[in-house]
Each structure stands twice: as structure tokens, then as C-alpha cells.
Image (cartoon, rainbow, N blue to C red; front, side):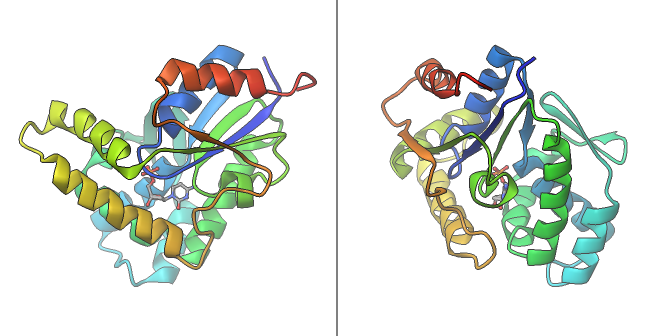
Length: 218
Ligand code: DC
């Protein structure tokens, strides 16, 4: 099992999770999609009636919440909520809870604890800049918004056949704006990140590129 630490960041639908999961499987590392943790706070706070304006309540909830990641499944306090976390309402709410500095601090500490000991591919928005600034390999995946909207639309029509690509496009624009304009850890490539435009590449191409970039000593 590799002890390396790989940080992958990028905007919505840039391919982070698919690439990260495949790279982790190829090199025998754990995989953590940190977006699921923000989604979990969003979902649980909605269930418990904690308002998105209640920073203290959200922080306490994030601290007390027990998250277990099992491959692509996520359990919150023992309940498998993987499907619920993909809901549009949870997604929109997760962008809001992710702007709250104390929520971020709490989740970042949990993410750093999960990476202690190495052997992990972690994906998100601030992994290379804040969570794992010493990671030996930092990747920033990007793609033109039209291509990301096309991909996300393709995924969504399987579950919701009448969803329109133009609505997905608008939704991505909105989430890109919230993620990159927020004060706390805005989405941006780390200075030492390798930026890969996935627009013209297949998933396997990107996985090959990332695996080739893993430093030999790790
Ligand atoms: O990657 P995703 O769409 O599942 O992320 C959900 C929200 O959480 C999204 O608005 C960005 C935010 N997020 C973040 O701010 N930092 C991370 N490390 C991961 C996700």
C-alpha cells in the first residue's frame, strides 16, 4: 500500500471524484471525497432544523457528527445517506454551509486526521491550499464550464430524464461563483499544483497522467 498523499482540487464536475477514486484504486490508497462531508452537514442541519445562518449550531453539528466513509458510501451517525446527499436541495445548501469558517475549520481538522499516516487521495476545493499544504502531489483539475455542464447533465438525466442542460449550466455558474468568491478558503489552485484541463481528455487519460506524476519516493 502506497503511503503517498495526493491532493486533487477543482470546480464542480471537473472530474475530481471519478479521477480520485480511480487513482486511489490503481495505487492502493484510501479515497476521501471531502465534498460529501460538507453535504453531510447540509443534510443533517436541514433534518434537525438548524438554520444556515446559525454558524455556531452548524459548527457544533459538524463537530459532533460521526462520519464513516466506506468507498463511495457515506454513513452519518451510522445511517447510510449516500443517495440523500446527491439531492439538489442538499447540494445548494452545502455551498452555503461551506462558506462558514468554523464549519470549515472543524471539517478540515477531521480531514487532516484521516490523512495522518498517508496513503490517501483526497479531493475537494481547498485540499492543496489548506487541508494538506505539504502533499507531495497536488493536482488542480479544470474544464470549460460548457463541458462540465454537458458531463453533469449526462449524469443527471439518468436519474431525472427531463432536466435541461441550460439549467445545469446556470446551476454550475452559481456554484462556481459561491465556491470561488467566498472569503473562507476560496476555490483556487495551490501555487505548486499541476493544473490539468480535462476538457479534451477521457477519464482514463487523466488517471494515467496523475499516476505518472506520483513522485517515485512516495
Ligand atoms: O464537491 P461537491 O459538489 O460534493 O461539494 C459540495 C460543496 O462543498 C461545494 O459547494 C463545495 C464545498 N466544498 C468545499 O468548500 N471544500 C471542500 N474541500 C469540498 C467541498
